[in-house]
Length: 261
View: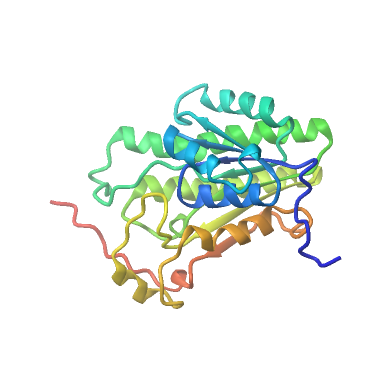
């Protein structure tokens, strides 16, 4: 059998993807459905996530869910709804993150924006990942998780709420990978560069800093995301940070912000 045939078993593997209404989350969720994996598409915006699920290769395997993961109790509701739809969730992708505003530098970012960025990225990522792992361990099943971090987990972005949240998420991946590995649960990070997705709008001139000569698209991430999620392809990969940036990490193109003082 060719090594890349049937990366997933549709009869026994299921997925939950947050941030699946647009951008990278949508691309990964739709790719999973394309491989026959029944998938819950979770997002804060009802219309985009419903359209994402309906636009999948097999809409009967795609289930839209709407809720705000920054709010207490919504993670528990998402888990309960996902289990009612799928049974045991074997694959988890955490791509949800609030929008970023370039104006939110260290002196400008509000307390609410700071708290919300961490709540959706880190707090929801922790609670969802922990409870999904708990269920897999109780069932004696293997699984895999993939968290969307950022190049700016290690490089300043002039957006301290965003960079620090992604840095915390990157360490959470390592903590989970170490804790769950002996139970057959793999946890990895996908590290995007300048990807034109999820509301990110870049000056086209930024492409000159990318060795491959162009900005990324959500579709550039989905194939490798599936390969890392697949226990058949990446069964010996955990705690890894897979960078997909066209080589952008080879430079830091941001100047210090004007703090207005």
